[in-house]
Length: 83
Ligand SMILES: [Zn+2]
Image (cartoon, rainbow, N blue to C red):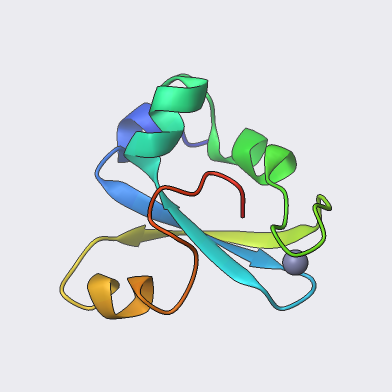
């Protein structure tokens, strides 16, 4: 179990069964859910923005590095909390 507070500098990538991929900064999640929530709970709570279903197949924790911005422009709006 990984608490959000322990990975607050990272981002989460959520892979949906419909092949949609979303990502969000852990800091944003902490603001919504608090730092005591673990990554598994986020996986269970996450909804796909395509069909509003809870169908996340896997979650990856990523470090925000130089390549992140390139990824960022291709998907969800920056302030979206609904992926
Ligand atoms: Zn989906």
